[in-house]
Length: 173
Image (cartoon, rainbow, N blue to C red):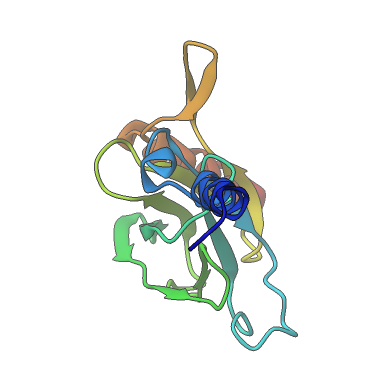
């Protein structure tokens, strides 16, 4: 038979464990977020030879996510679109992207991370002529007091490619 004191300690400990356990509904209560890490750590076997790393978050917590994207290019005046493949790493919510586009032309990467339903977080990654990253943007909007991700428009992608193609052509003259 248990004493009332031991029973109350057991109940208190159980309540503390339940309160400390992550709630799946809390993780789904808000928007996703995405960040880009460049360059990837060449000393980590899981990220060696990766062009960049994608970090997927739900609020501030790293989360497993549906990460996908495209490499959008303008090569010899022709539009190209390549579906990108991402590899999981040994860290929660971190995905490696290896180069899957050509060295020719002007390229913008459109990368999405989300858990299904709702607007995914999206990053617009512009590549410089030397193949490095020249800029990363995560378009946002305000909802009440929160800054939340918004969808990247086709117009933003085209503008990204056209403006750099024009600058590249002028630099070659």
